[in-house]
Image (cartoon, rainbow, N blue to C red):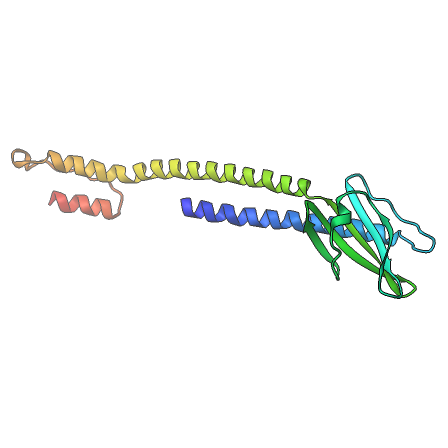
Length: 193
């Protein structure tokens, strides 16, 4: 039971953790795409980030040099920009990088980040919950196994105690047979003969 509980708990934890992170990633991609869709370079029209979000909007000029259009203050200025659309997890920031092909044949690029505290905090809370539930499950399994084993061994103990009472002075005494049509009834009949 213990091994099954541990394996099952681990599988459930991995499944829900993966699902939560996937949904979080979808939210970030959707949010970044929304901001990018509302962004224009000429004239500069930029959808501002929500509270807790940081963005960097830029494009590359004819000399392939990045031209910064807008950047939120803070740690986002220290993040490296990848060369393709990807999720970013660096310097305590979790985010997404996207490109939009629409400005003179050059892509408008967006880096959207949020603090990774919320994501990590939620995963840590879920981890603690799963550890607690697995512990409770293990305890319930151990208690159930203890009582089940006692219930299963009770007939064998009864046979053993009755057989111990038979001695040279009580050879005529017999073990009581319970009609169970199983191996225990067969064992009792064998001892009585």
